[in-house]
Image 1 (cartoon, rainbow, N blue to C red):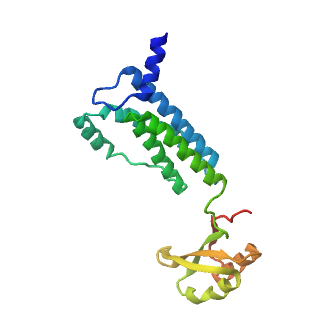
Image 2 (image 1 turned 135 degrees about the horizontal axis):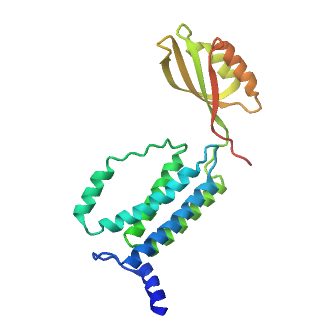
Image 3 (image 1 turned 90 degrees about the vertical axis):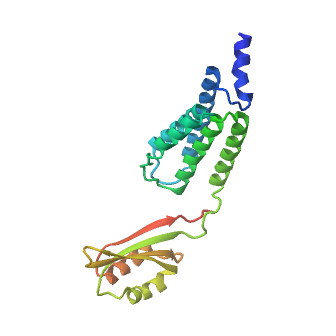
Amino acid sequence: MEPIFANAFDFLTHSNSADLPAPLEVLGAMSLSFVLNLLIGALYKATYKGTRYSQDYVHTLVIIGTVTTILIMVVNGNGAVAFGMFAAFSMIRFRRNLGQSRDLAFVFFAMATGMGIGAQQYIIVLITTLIVSLAIYLISKKDAFAPNRASHQLRIRVNNDVDFSIAFKEIFSKFTDAVEMISVESVQAGMMSELRYGLILKQEIQISDFMEEIQIACGNNRAILTTTQRELDF
């Protein structure tokens, strides 16, 4: 039994080599990659803030990280295989619409972990994954870099004969501390314009009062207010 346990431990301290990895090392690397990517998936779930959490996305993180390990071990030292695999994967596109920017960062995190293990840098990957995971968990739980004031995005549709540079000026002055015009888009076959504003509302105002005045000013056309950054809790 002792040689088996000795061989199982050896794969963790195995140095880079141009030789193909032994079957036991492949199995050990895949297992380590799977466990670390489970940790990344659990970290994503524990630190997620929003209403669009997806179990499917977490499963994808684990699969991507583990499969990346296999790919790196296959192409290690074989330029022809690496080139062919690169050409094949260049045709693949990530089809899912990511709900948050951090979702893309977690994809790279899982892939980097898988690549490091596939390159046989086991100890380095193990240490760095734990450190990065701890850092992500701490900044998430401490709510680091959150804004002091909530911000919103306002979408309004108006008829083309409305001078929107003047129509909403008084309302914005009354209800907001900051306003930024984001975009103007022609909609409904050019019959109307859709305006997008970034807003920081004044404290203690009633959003219902603000939206009521906006609705009147835009002629009872569509008006949507969404929160883009939540307020920092003290």
